[in-house]
Image 1: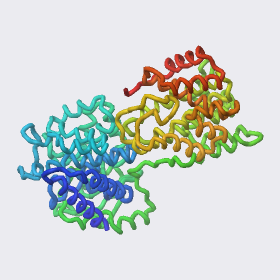
Image 2 (image 1 turned 90 degrees about the horizontal axis):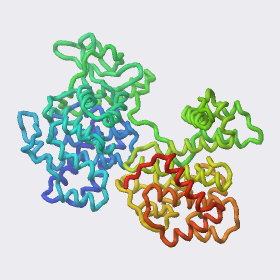
Image 3 (image 1 turned 180 degrees about the vertical axis):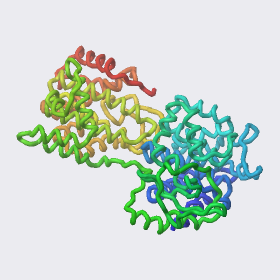
Image 4 (image 1 turned 120 degrees about the vertical axis):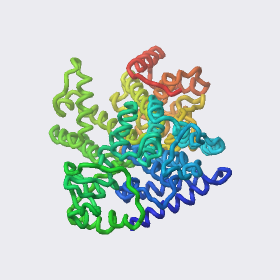
Amino acid sequence: MPDSLIKQQYQSLHKLLALYRRPEVGNDLVQQSLDFSNKVLVLAKQHPNLTFGQIHLHKTSLPVSYQLAFNTCLITALICVRNRFNETTTQQLMCAAISLFSLNQSYLDKPQNEEIQLNSNTSIGTLNKPFCRILTQYQQAVWLRGYRQIQWLQKEVKKHLSSLLGASEDVVCLALASRLSLMMHGTTQIKKMSFQSALSYLVQHSPSTATKLLEPLMVFPSVTPPGAYVMLDDGSLGIVTGIFDSGVACFPESTARQKSAYTSHFIVSLSRVKQVYCAQKFKQFNKLNNLWGDNWQEFKRENQLKTVSAFTPSYKMSRPPATLIAIQEQLNKPVQDIKALSKAIAREPAFAQHLQRTASQSSRQKLPMKDIQHGLMMHGLERSGSIIMQQALLSRLNQHYFPLQKYFVNFAQLRGHIAASLAKVADIGIPEQACTLSHFACVGLFTHPQLKIQLKWQRPTSCFYDMRSLISCVNSEQLRSHSLSLAEAWHQPRHEIVALSNYHELHYLKSQKQTVSVKLAALLGISLIISRELYFVESQRCVQTLAYWQSASKVLGVSEQELKLIAQDAFSVCHTFSPV
């Protein structure tokens, strides 16, 4: 039952907040908070309308601190999932949202004419230093960075929003969520607002980078969010229970002055909604059963309705897209059918657009390619297959935000360009295929669990040709193994998989014959060395790196001058930005 689901979350929150109320913050607080955020996220996936809708129903039986902590946690999750944040990053930000208010429960729960005013005389904006040390000890960097936003909660709203200019997306997300929650509760210098009004205020007074994070909220929960009280054009009231393409579903609310013509759930177009009210007091949890219980499920089935999803679909990394498989099947045929291949590519607009755009850039006169077949003829079939593979792989790797994401994308593209240039100079197959292979070699940066919550790119100073030395992390072997397993899952050629599994071993370059795998291994190693030196301006190569460089150069048959020109060209073409 919906009421029991929400009650269970508040009961879990009650136990969690009891840990925050202890005189000294304990180490167990970190794991307990992470467990709670995980449970909330699971519930939101299963029952999004119920979970996010109850934010707009203020429970009079619960302390203010409970509702602020829980609602800020949920709004944080909502902004994160709408903007495709990585789940690990999302959970840490949800924990930070809870921490913002949980360490100040005694102040927040004081009755102050039923409203809380945050000002410079309160302790709400003071960092709890022992708690910060615990987060540092347990390497909860995203959580700690988000929790530091507590120093702004007592500040004027516009000053807080203006401070977000240039801030990272995770910090901005939590700041926006906390302000939305405070505005909807009427616990700021600004009077209590509806979700629509609060969202409009934030959009008007936030930097453009912040407003981009708010844009996906216009689809879900929209300006008529689930849980909101609305007035229709006939003067009747209703509570929104779901969002549809054709309008909103409501549950009738009758008053002494105005009785609703409906007795159960009904659908109305948005044009009939004349007013959206701010969050209303909510006394009885069992009313949630009327809103999102069995009647709601039956109503959706009878009307064959599909509500707008809060969660955007995620693509599995473990297997290539079905469209890509169809394209590869067409390319692997002894005789290719250009029309059939074009149709296969057209099924995925992102592939078609990328192919046409790169073909236009490749043409001497930069003429725009008008159709897919023209792009295929410009690139050639093998090059086209590699270009589409790159696009598919990068779109999968890049689908979720995490703090170091943009730097990893930047680095992977730089390495890809260098690998393609090396392949061209050394005459090893198609340059685009070498670029694709280098992208697979960088997969571990996007899949290693610890790197999803890391804020700083720290690296060892030896073995520049080894992925394990590219960034400091636990279980660094995963930086290699993840690349290999994904390349196998995506059906890459066997000789490329052999190169991926051996390129970090110097003896492999020395002991083998000059096979394609050995040459590709040398290409991967040198491309990593050059990329690293350009990206971080490394000071000096270690002995192992010098030995690897000499052996790999010999295998590829390229001179020092050629390698220097490749590095110079890459630096001018790829506009990289290093976080160091």
